[in-house]
Length: 409
Image 1 (cartoon, helix red, strand yellow):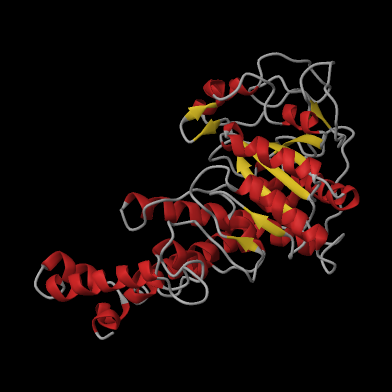
Image 2 (cartoon, helix red, strand yellow):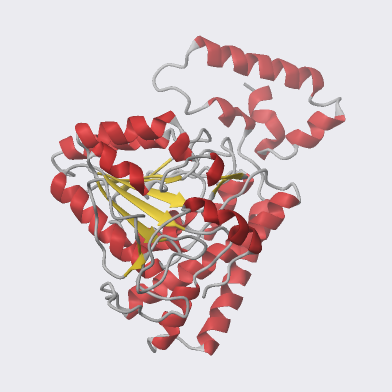
């Protein structure tokens, strides 16, 4: 049996409160029966709780009747390294956030890396707060992550004007994250529809939208799924159900059988998967993506997960497959920690972008009057207080050229 934090044992039972047993048992701390076959459904089920698809058991071995998704040594190494990199970044950035150096941080692993590996590199991704792993998978480097979190002048996501972990990258087909919950869900339906209309993307690319089960309580969830199912649009919705919306347990969010129960109401293919089993996620997202392209409409995947739980499944299977050993494991951990610490120290030493960048890239074309007015107001305040008031001098010293770009304008 997989061991999870006691808080999860106490509260995650809120996912499901009744159900049927299966030969492979139930999802830990719930009664959702484990199944070894990947079966999407598109109608209301009458035989009990929605089952959870899994490939590996808690020791990293195949469960009875399961089949491994197609995976070679190179792909396995990349998945495993990225899944080790994420908790390494998490540990450092959580501590940095608690030190007050950055203001905000979130992360997760198996669901994100398994799904990232199943998507095409040019599928459009609309994420929430925990999808940094998708960017890492696509080549967004550790220095890029640190630059965004610290908001220094190397931040390509938003020139230091966004909250930490609000990434965005046109190059990596990753739409900029916004703070309000669930806004990306209807937007993803529109992105998918645009891909369906584009001759060079039609039948080749999908929109992939990530969100937590808390976001599924927002009205935007229903608007987005209704839009994507009726237009229709090839949008793959991936719901991460870890039992909590920040600190609100799902018992206080909904009474039904999770998020997957809602898919048939919109007429879309749906499946529930063990979000801690990276190979099950890989298989489910591959099949979900195929259905999106084939049908041209939305698909919903609910990944059942736990916070702060890594990838016990993948590690054992990776080693048992003969592709890994204890020496490689130790070398990887040491190297990743060194790389992350090096990037952290470097990012902490780099100044923010010029203060004048605060007003750029807001509108296209001619700059509107209100932006000009705001720049002039800030410039006036800098001339009045910038040299004489210590808090302003301290803050200006954090910017490239100490704010002189505005004073000289």
